[in-house]
Structures are given as C-alpha cells and as structure tokens.
Length: 245
Picture 1: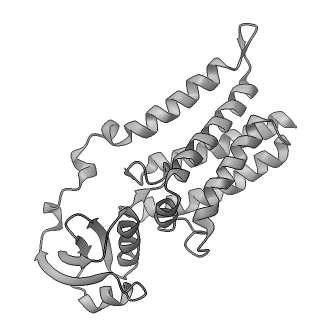
Picture 2: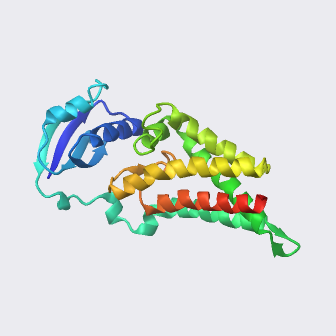
C-alpha cells in the first residue's frame, strides 16, 4: 500500500533528505520517496498508518507540514528512477571517479619499469580519500543530513556528518605524505569499518535511501556497491599494515 502526501516547507535537497529520514523512521514504513518540486511524499507501508504518526515524526521541524493527498493500493505500480535506469547508468559517476583514481595511481607507481604494489595502494588510498572528501565538502550540510540517515554514529552524534569529510581528507593527506603507516592504517580500518556497518544494515533492510559516498552532488542509491567500496578500503589498509610490519 502506497499513500501520497502533500508536504509544504521543503525548499532544497537538504529538506528532502531531512523529511525522508524522519518519515522513514516511522514504524511500519517500508519506503519513502520525496519530490521537493511537487511538494509530495509517496510512502509505502505494510498497512494503513495514521497521518498523525507522520505529523508527530515532523513535529520537531514545524516548517514541514504534511497532509494526505491520495492512496495507491499497489506499491508495485510505483516504478522508481533507479529501476528504470541501467546499473551502469546509475553508478557511472562513481565508476568513472574510481577508474580515474585507479589508473592515475597505477601510472605513478611504476619504478624502473616495474610496479611498486605498496606505492600503488598508498597512492590509491590517498586519491580515494581526498577526492571523495572533496565531493562531500561541496555541499557539507546536505551531506551531513544524508549521512545521518544510515551511519550508526551520525544517527546519534549530530555533528559527526560535518566532521566525517575532514576525517577522510586527513586520511588522504596521511597516505599522500606517508605519515606513520601503522597509525594511518589502523585509523582507516576503524573509520571505514564503522562506516560500513550502517551501509550493510541499510542494504540488508532494503532501505531505498541515497548513498552519501559522493556527497549531495550525485544521486546514487545505497547498494552492495557501497559495501564493496567501504570494505575494499578496509582490505587495502590491512594489506598496507602487513607491508609496514
């Protein structure tokens, strides 16, 4: 069952993420799709939920007002944008960015005609964290709102989403200047390991929310791609630690 609601007070992508996050937390809600331009929210639920529950969810933000607009009994008739696009079209921005970092770091890691694997991994990690932090910092407030929808720390610590891009930037610089490889590797494992927990939970719970890996610049859905991205960084950090020892 999908209900369509009219929501006033939304003016930007930050509002979208905030409203979507708040409504998604209502018990019994399966999925929330918010359209800022139309001022609407389509909420898929297991059974009919009182509009009062959604008003309570938005109560701390009085500028957002919700009213019932219509009901669609078949949720399957609602075809999401992600489903209409191919997998490659959906993740093309992420794939292109990772490919650029991969090949640039690969080219710069050849010494006397042979590949220095440790130097390549170090360069890749530096490029990954610096580039990904850059996209997050382009719109820090929207990233923080989006990140708080699934990260286990950002959900509880209000300012963590604003700090996280700077943590990534610091890790990138640490890899770039080869600062204390053991400390940097352990910090990477902890930061990315914790980050992956929220991603895994969201994917397992089939939550249709935006992945904040590239900040608010690109609209990427949360999926196993995000899990692989986080766990790959953990794996590479472990490998670099092994080399450092």
